[in-house]
Every structure is written in C-alpha cells, then in structure tokens.
Image (tube, rainbow, N blue to C red; front, side):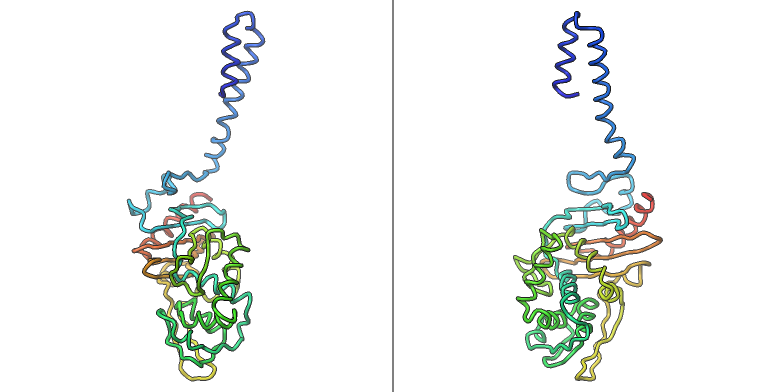
Length: 313
C-alpha cells in the first residue's frame, strides 16, 4: 500500500463520523490495490521468469547440476534460441578480448562483400601472419572460399589476412567494414582494430554481442556449412600442395548436435568458445570468454542447458 492510501485510511479511521460507507470503500480499495501488487509476481513465477543473483548468475533449483563453486570463465552466456531465454550467464556484458571469435565478423563481411569464386593472391604481409597459420607462401593463389574454410575451421591467420586484404582492399578498410556491420547490428559494446583477432586496446566485444553476431552469421548457408566441418583440404590453384584443415573445435563429433561455431585464444583473451547445439528440438547457443577449462566448462553448460531447456518446454 502506498503512502497516500495509508494516510487516507488513517484519516478516515480517526474520525468516527466518517466511518460507514467511506470506510468500506477505503478497505475495498486497499484490498484491490494489494491484490494487484501481488498479481504480476505470481504471473511471472508461473512463466518461470529467470531470477538472477547480484553477480549475474542464473539461479534456481536446476543450477545445482553445474559442477563448480567458482565460475570458470570471465564471461559466459548460455541461451535457448527457440525461446530467447537466458539459461545461464556470468558478466555477459563485460568487454573482453574476443581473440579469433573476431573471425565470425570477418567471415560475415567476406560473405556479404566478396564472391566465393574470387581468386586471391597471398600477399607477403599475409604470408608473414603469426600463428595460428598454415605457412602459406606469398604469390600462392586460392579461391576465396578456400581461405574462408581455413580461417573458420583451423583459424589460420595467414588465410584470414589474405581474404581480408582481398575483400577490403587492405586490412584497415576491411576493419572499417567490420565496425560498420557491428553498428548496423546494434553491437554497442563491440569494436575491432584488426581483421583476425589479435589483442589491442580498441579490439573488444562481449558475450552478449558475440551471441547476436553468431546468430546472424549462422543465417548464412556457407558459414553454417563450414563451421560444422571437422576436416577439409584446400589447394592453391597455381600449385599442387594440399593443406589439410582439422577443426580446432573439440566438441564437433564428440557431443551430438554440436554445429560449430568458433574457437579463439590469445594470451590476453584466454581460451574462448562459441558453440551451437541442436538436439531433440532444442537449440542452444553458448559463449565462453577467457576460460582455463574451456572444454570441460562447455560440456557441463551444454548438458545443463539441454536439461533446463527441456524442463521449461
């Protein structure tokens, strides 16, 4: 009951001549007001609105299924894509280095701005790109799709930089395209300073923004096809050497329904992962940033998410 209602009721009760119909009216209004105040939480509870503790962790009876006392990553977001419900989160809006998760945006811009049959010549700068790399040689010529495979499946920085330079004209212009796309998608806490995911003070994103980006990228058939591949081979059109690509995503082929998406690692960003899982009509998206135990953490969260999303159906 608010202050004005309390004052009114007190004033009526302090004057006996005003009792009777007025008192009945005030009591009726107070009852209706209190009932209305409790209605919204009841409906919210019936709909299982997510409750969060002060640290931002999803809490509830189901949370007992997670095997840790201390959150094993700097940032986590686990979403049920069918309902949009957040199943678990920890600091999802914290700006962090995304490492090679950056290549999701790079791939999206390449798919939108380039042609997969384009012929791309590896530049000396691309050939010098630091690890992870395939040791491509300057002057080798690849189809753009082959380079896209390499950057998504094995996170090759030389393939990434060659593709970025080709589509953007140079890396700086390509980064401008990346940031324009981030702005168009409403990724307010994301900014890129390079095309492949190297650490920098102006290179950051959040689990929330990366989740949105991943959903958009997965709408692209070529992207969706490549991020679920465990193994592939590429070859330059002007050479005979075959490069074997083995996925960096250990969840592929080990957990049923895993469909990608991307791994990342730098000394500053730590071990990062975005995973998409579809199982028995349930679709989950998991983002983990800076975790020392990336695979164990991901497995626990995926199992938890499948149980939780199933119980909410």
